[in-house]
Structures are given as structure tokens and as C-alpha cells.
Amino acid sequence: MALMDFIKKQFIDIIQWTEDDGDTMAWRFPMAELEIQNGASLTVRESQMAVFVNEGQIADIFGPGMYKLTTQTLPVLTYLKNWDKLFESPFKSDVYFFSTRQKIDRKWGTPNPVTIRDKDFGMVRLRAFGIYAFHLTDPKAFHTTLSGTLESYGSEQLEGQLRNTIVGHIADIFGESGVPFIDMAGNQEEFGRALKAKLDPMFQTYGLSLDSLNVQNISLPEELQAMLDKRIGVNMMGGMQAYTQFQTAEAIPLAAQNEGGLAGLGAGVGVGFGVGQQVAASMAQALNPAAAPAGAPGAVAPATTPAPSADEIVATIEKLHALVGKGMLTQAEFDAKKAELLKKLG
Image (tube, rainbow, N blue to C red):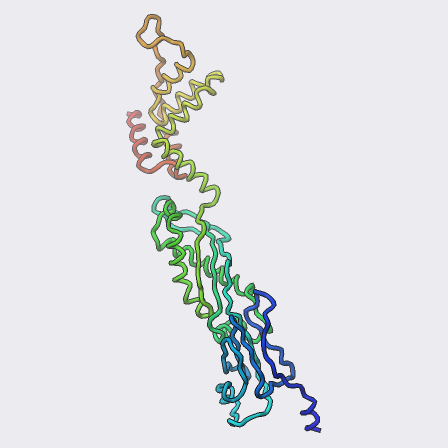
């Protein structure tokens, strides 16, 4: 009876894996109750590796090529099973194939802004994203740490962990660099290299090689970007005072259309930034462009700006201090304007 069972039993004489997708990284050859014929053919294609596992213990590992499975080509398995050198009977073993093809254009990004200390803006929140590429190099490490006895293991099961690990190092890289946000766009390649160096050991523990990592964009959240754009506009105009003068000149035609508009405009700007005389002159000319120059017969004397009250000066200082908190005014500019306004109190 045992002889008939042996005769009826099916044996495997060809072991191979034809990859049908680009996602699977590990695949277990379907053994069921079958046994491998001694002298069977093992085909490992380019960009593949194969591993024999005996009772949970990794035995022989094969790179690309075609092999005849014998005690000579399976030295570790032969040792584990205590085979004789002339052993010819079928045997059982788990066989796993691993894809070593490079996984490219894998995306990473910060789902939420990360907070870092910036020497220009203090504490800022940044967003960053980019791409990376990797491939499997050590099937033993990959099998023991990730895929295990699963029938198949795809890259989508792994990439969430990889992305989160990359993002977890972003704050460290930006903080350690000491590069201000304004200069980060010009240092993205250097950031990519530094981040890759930090991540290489982690990838190696999984049996992977991190082939490349690129930082494609570094940006601020929308509300902070809007504040930065406003500050850049102030600097482009030559500072806060020049920017205020420009805004005043833009507002004069609109203020002239409203009753009392010019008076309010002159008082507010004159108190805040010490340009009352210039504003008053601009107002007079806007109201009467054909007026004769000062000193000419019949010329109207220019209006004088009333001295600001103590409450107005204090309110202006508070408004300027709020602009410092929003990054629209530097501390030095604020201190200068504050000193100037406090003199008027005396």
C-alpha cells in the first residue's frame, strides 16, 4: 500500500516564478503536499533571488541562473536534513522567490507641516515632498523582518512604513542644517543627500538598498506664505517707511472721493510712521493740482498736521508691535519707530 501511495504521489521537477506584476516583492512557491524531485530544475530569472527554507530555518540562497537541485547545489539544506551525499529521494522544502527589481518614482511627503526653528523667522512650519527609489538586496533579512511565511508580499505593504520613516527625519535634517527657509530652495539637493545618509541603515535592516532620494519642494503653509510674500513686498519697496508712503500715494485718490477721508488718512499715517508732512503735501496737491507753488501770490498755506495725542501714540506702538509678531516688521525697525514716537510724548 505504501508503495502504491509513493507511485501515485506527484513530484515537482520544475521550480520557477514568472512575475505577473511589478509590485510583488516576495512570493512563496505553491508546494501543498508536493515534494521536490531530486535533480529538479530551479530557474531564477534576472532581477530575482530564490531561498530554500527548511522548517522555518533559511537554508540555501540562489541568484539568477538555472540549477539542478542535488546535494551538491543544496549544501545547507543537505546539512540541515542530514542527507547522505548519494541521497536521491524527493524532499520537502519551502521555496520563496524575491524580486530585486528597482522600485522607482515612489513618492513621499509631509501630511502635516513640521515645525523647525529658523534663524530669520523664529519658529516656522514647513511642508516638503519628493521621490525615492529602492530595491531588495538581502532576501534573508527581508524574509525574517518583513515577508515571513506570507504567500506573497507587495511593495504597497511596505511603503507606508518607508514614507513615515522618511518624513520622521525631515525635521531633524532641516533643524541640523541651520539653513534659513529663504535659502532652502537652493539646497534641496544637499538635503536629499543628507536625508538619504540618515535612512540608509534603516533600509538595510529590511534587506533593502535606498538607491536615491530627492527633495523636490519645500514650502510654507498658505497662511505663512502670504505673510512672507507681504514681507518680501515691503523689503522690495525699500523698507516699511517707503512701503507706507507707496500705500499712501495709492490711497490718496480713493480717500479724496470720500468726505473726511483725507484728514483721517493723514492723521493715521503721520502718527504711525512720521511722514505726516509728506502726506499733507500730497493731499493738498491731490485736492488742487493747479494750485500755485508755495510763496506765489494768492497761494494757500499748506495745512499743518495736528500733534498726535498720547492715546494715539500708544495705539500706534501697539499696532507696530503686532506687525513684528507677524513678521512684517523687524525688531530693529520697531525699536527705531518706538523711540521716535516716545519722543513725541515728551
